[in-house]
Length: 303
Image (cartoon, rainbow, N blue to C red):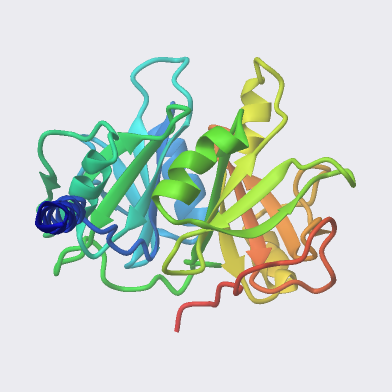
């Protein structure tokens, strides 16, 4: 009996040590930025500063690249392409208060992580990994300094609320985003009833989300990939967006006009010079969504 008791104590002690060796997952609070690649940096500068009303600043991560800010805490990072066939949508970056802990957490769960964390001149720290389908994901801990500190009053919206990208297998991606990172379901739907084409998963400690874009053909065209790989800017009222865009030379077209989304939210699509889709979307639905109810809180405009 004494031997059994000692064995039980040793077992419990070993279990405690094992639990201590696996670090807890740090918080993931939202989208930090979107990383893009462009075939024409000057064209992107004109589009993002004039049409979106954002401020251009030199990138601190990408040599010869640019950052476009609507407000200090989120941005679009654009790097010059290294080849004519390089895809424009490069990565999604998430904000965490503990990038060191995130790296240790992912490494403990057999995710390939870099040997060191990058440290940037604004005081921020970051590293990149790949999800199961090869999409690049960055985790960034903001620094005390910011490359841009003043919201641009010309920005139609400065609030990135979600990013979407092509996904071949939702269960495979779920193993990373849901099981490992703790993302939670926000909404799911499709262009046709009974067919799931979109799966929206919110970050575990905020309301920003990613969107699986499913059911693309085996070899999507540049245009099809541009529609799937996108990011969304939250707005309060779409009519205001239409009015401001019209003042800047935008005119409605079959691919770019105010429309009701399947999720019950008004939206309007723009395309940058590399055909990346920028989706203006109202924060709250105006009508009942198709397919499924929302299961999480809606994002809000920055105060």
